[in-house]
Amino acid sequence: MKKFKKTIGQLSKMAIGLALLGALYTTHASAQTLNVDLMINDDQTEITPQSRGNCTNGNHPGCVQTTKASHADINFHLKNEYTDCNRAPGAKWELSAVILGGKNSPTKPASWGTLDAEVTADFDFADAASGLLKVENGSNGRKLSISDKNQYAYDIWYTVEAECVGTDGAILDTLKVDPRVSNVGQ
Image 1 (cartoon, rainbow, N blue to C red):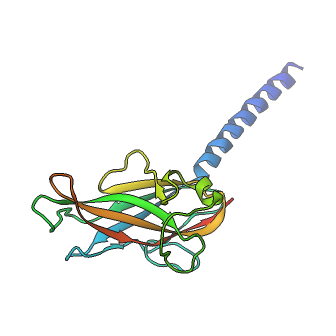
Image 2 (tube, helix red, strand yellow):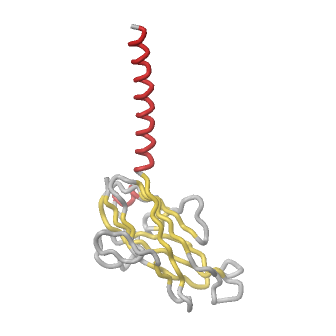
């Protein structure tokens, strides 16, 4: 009987250990990080995605697709070695905003925002009417991070803005790029 109790105790500890390991694996398996590298061209008239894109349908540079049942952290990186803006002495290029619009639209939307309950449930908005997203902690002029809960399946366009900021804080110019996010949902 003593040996039986010892075996039951060992099996219980092993079961708890396996359950904790499974929970840890599930936590790691349910989160993904997607990166989009962006570059400002040499004459500083456009910003373009350098990342290949991973979308199954309609893939193009900068397109990001989530995996089923996974939360996604999407990071936008300004990859230029320089950030000097040629609009004024001392001015710098900085990533400034990520905006959503055009849910399931085959073409880039004419206006941004006007999003339904699925989109507003998936993303954290600073201003849902305009489509402006909140950026996550750790974001700065070279990197913007957003969070996508990926609860619903749809495609949505995003625009990333880079601003030329003068030494006095004035916005001297804005460049935009408009790839898509393809959510596959739960």
